[in-house]
Length: 122
Image (cartoon, rainbow, N blue to C red; front, top):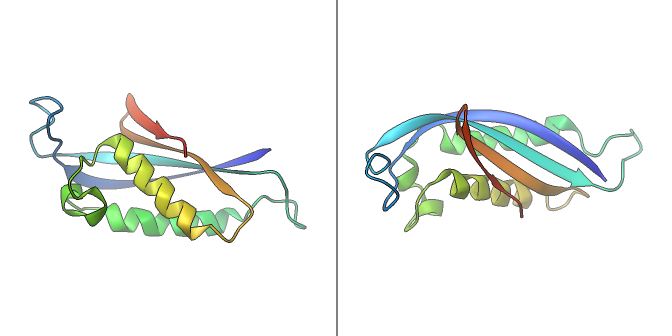
């Protein structure tokens, strides 16, 4: 099994409901996103998948989140745009974009600060 990791980031605001009084206030983060992909077979070039393909897909996902009020995005309609749910959003979206490749999303980790992150494992 091989695993690749690509790191990206975005800045956005959110407002969490029913978590704690402080997090219920509108606030923002400079999010760091780590997307890991795995697979069993290397291609003829000796790579699992070209990093450029993953970087391009992840960049598009970050663009959809960057400088947005996450609560207003359809994906989070009716739910909290928490680090956990953002990680799942990135994983689900990336998974759809690579569905015709021999790799899978193995995990996505989203950091909302230097010392706090959430990981989603599909």
